[in-house]
Length: 205
Image (cartoon, rainbow, N blue to C red; front, side, top):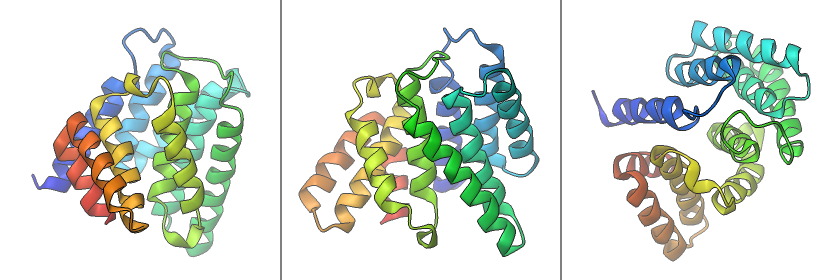
């Protein structure tokens, strides 16, 4: 298992354990968050299964911004895996519209265990940050990651997820030529999880 694969496995575990709190009571949500974590790792049919769960939650409550964020993120994966360029654009753009709607509705959204705004910012921030430059989402990704880091419940996330968010911010600072800020953010990330921190930073630098 190489470093990238092992880091993905760590992040998958974090999504399974950190984004699905033991005190969450909604079994539909727990199914969705578990399937989403698997979809991030495996893609393909795993994405379709998670999409089905997101749509089932939205059928029960169309205004559930957490479910909407997951659906939006999953649709960007569908687009990323599509063979035809027009399908890539279609699914990614629809997914981004849903993500933007979820972020706009994150304050006061129904909770499934984690603070809903925290969870939506995490999903939206990571999704926007991984998109290719052609989608021109970096400015928004930076804003969302900043909001995520400044969220008062940020420490509720699993260490691997905190490390990922901090490393993304560090890579942005490094890109801007702000080496001191990048160093501070990366050290914070390494305190949360050194392996994830270095892998994410190196991948983005």
